[in-house]
Image (cartoon, rainbow, N blue to C red; front, side, top):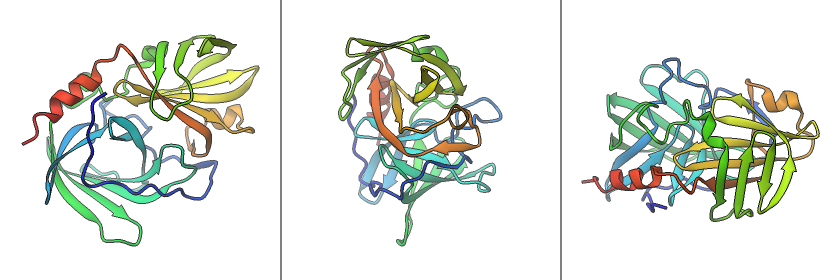
Length: 257
């Protein structure tokens, strides 16, 4: 896996537990069927020097892995400005740090971190990668088939090996008969004996997240396009062992000046 550590980091503070939130989400596909503007590899121009920023359609990466979920704030999505709530992987509610992306050119933006109760931190950024879903390996558009097959666990995940087929989930050699169906672009809902047990969500790049539900999640909640479940029993990041996106990202980051 590639490694990068932005000088500017988001705080990791667990929010109050919540089952769901209104979905003015980055999960909603763009009207033009392209990835959101922020998807890609960026150079942040900080006072301390250039720093890498890697963002998929709905996750900010840290240390080479998906880390911060992005939830688009309703009413702020015009042609240039996009405001997001954030949630850290395995937290049960929003992290009190917002992100704003303000497009200043076809491949340039202002990137703002806004910790609650503190002064926002704003830097300029330039794109190092190719935009749009057909060329960006960080996009999740039109990649539903990639869910099926073999995955391996990453740092912090309990499982070591995962195999996904249309009616079977095999974790470290133990097979479970399940039903898997797409509930939205980039996300599969998994049920066992008619009960929802997990999402398998495309994290962009070579990664996906197995999001295990707490007891009580209904089929209606799992499939609801208007609300987003925030509180999971656990979220395990898995990697496609045959993926090539990490190498592409590493190559882009080497282009920083």
